Image (cartoon, rainbow over the protein chains, first blue to last red):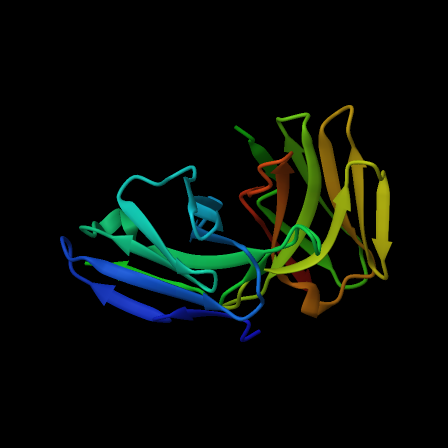
Length: 113
Length: 112
């Protein structure tokens, strides 16, 4: 589903480096989310945004920051990457007016060495 | 906050048999319960959902049941096929906030 696009798809970075993961959507949804997926832990919420001026911390926001540049764009930054941030990261969007289900992006596999 | 527990973590069934995955949630204010299927290397995709004013919902071979009193909901897949093999996630949405809290996932394997 090309409606929610994440870049890059894969990234290897070194400990201490700053890295940005980008998400853009063409669905016209106001709500956007960043989750990380780790084996056996499911999907855990990092940050979410209900509109351009609304940013909220999720369950595991420490070590991350976000920017909602426009309705269609929501970026996740790791200010100083550490190895335990190695994970699969998903962006998602939703529109409660059209149902509460999420549309996920394809994911970014991040490895911190 | 909301907590969602999912069991089992792995499940193997013979093709044609049924599979059941169960989830419990902690916050009685939760009102929306979707299920997602994630095939290997792909993104999670919504397969079925249920709202708190409904006890059961079916869509062909899959069904979801909700017991609000006990705060648990289940996914039922009948006549399983090899293409049903995937990781399944349950989730719950807390009231007006509406962000989803996910369970830890169930790896379903359908053996031919």
